[in-house]
Image (cartoon, rainbow, N blue to C red; front, side):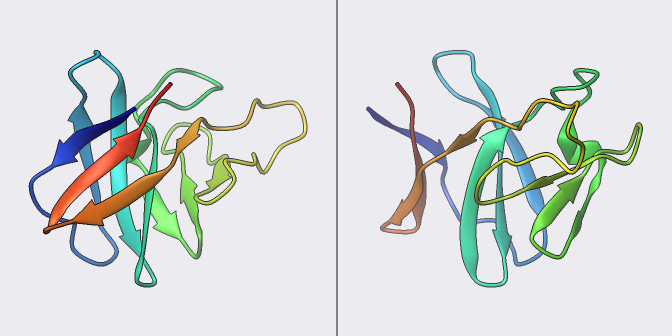
Length: 100
C-alpha cells in the first residue's frame, strides 16, 4: 500500500523526517538525484538517523558512526542489523512510500 509521506520532495542532500498515518517514523532523502526512504531509527541504539549525516550513498548515525546504505539498508558493521528501507516514488510533486 502506498501512503503519502510528504507534500514536496526534500532538497538535494537533505533528510526530512516524518511519521506516516500508521505511526511508522521514516525519513526521506534526495541524494544524487534519487529519492530514498527508510525507517528513522538506527538499528543499533534506536537513535533517529536524521540526527546524523549523509556520506556518499550512506546515512551515518550520529551516536556511534555506523553507516547504512540508502538503497539497500546494508550496515557498515557485520554485527549491526541493517536499516529498514522502503520503496519511494514521486507523483505530482508529492512523495509516497510503500509499506506492507
